[in-house]
Image 1 (spheres, rainbow, N blue to C red):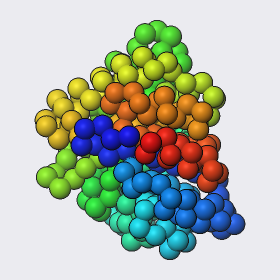
Image 2: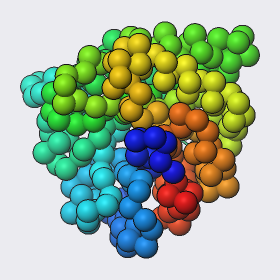
Image 3: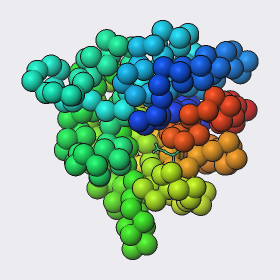
Image 4: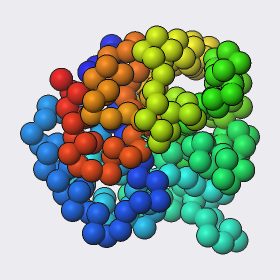
Length: 252
Ligand code: PGA
């Protein structure tokens, strides 16, 4: 589905899943993409170990990304990877500020903003994630939380830069729970208004993804919501059939 001039992005986040043997799923995805109209982008962010072999198999229609990066370009940072290295390996997007990184690695919004700037420096599109906890939702703080986190996490954009925002309610990730269409619409409109405030006209065309238990069974309904310009999909992106069913809903 194309909202105005915005091209839908169906993005898989494989998290810490996938071995070389999983590349057979990628081969299925690459051949299935050929049987669908080319009016939405498809992306997989595998573990860093698979970026190179996935890119080798990706063809013209599958984009490959990564799941995090260090803010610096190089240096004494054992175990880390820079945006430049990920770009060199073939990544065109990097997820930054995923809730699992924020909670398990203590990555705060100021750091997420540095990561986003590193992506832009390397010529990579950052996917900046944001979401509220269940307690914040219960207290009616969803929109305030999302805006507060995004104000601190979003980068300054140069004239050739772009970014993607992913709204992922923490309580919806991996749980099978999904907000109502009205709730998603309200949060995505709030994010849209913030993007226009921060980036003027360009904010109207930046993609806002929904993430959190998106599946073949609910994708069409979610992707039809105003200001939903695609999905960030965890569990359901691991199987080619599920990811392609979601992609099919996006291009229908
Ligand atoms: P899920 O994960 O689709 O498995 O809920 C989404 C995410 O964490 O990006």
